[in-house]
Amino acid sequence: MTDTFSKEKRSEIMRSVKSKGNKSTELKLIEIFKKNNLTGWRRNYPLFGKPDFVFPKLKIVVFADGCFWHGHNCRNTTPSDNSKYWTIKIEKNKKRDKLVTKTLKNKGWTVIRIWECEIKKNKYQRKINKLKKAMREIK
Ligand SMILES: [Zn+2]
Image (tube, rainbow, N blue to C red; front, side, top):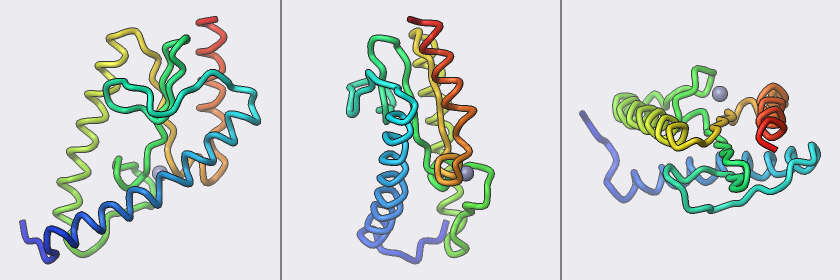
């Protein structure tokens, strides 16, 4: 694969894409949790796959997945330059996501993944309902 960026430049770009997208998404999700009276979640909980939010007592994890990084089939497309590089990178992330979900589920965790675009466009209610339902069933 061709790579027009230097290694340093590449990781700089990746860092900025990653932090920019995910920070605001996670903050918005915290607001949504509060609005829906969803409590008991932890950040930075040490668990395989580093879920964004973990409800340890209920064994529920919530991932806020950035559409670009996790290859969502919405209009967040790969950049036109070096698209092959990104495609490979994103395919790897998708495989990793599947592995994480499967591994956690096998260990008895309920895994909920919410897309960045669902959060941004206020289309998250279905996922929040799923979360609420899971919480009720476990409690
Ligand atoms: Zn999306």
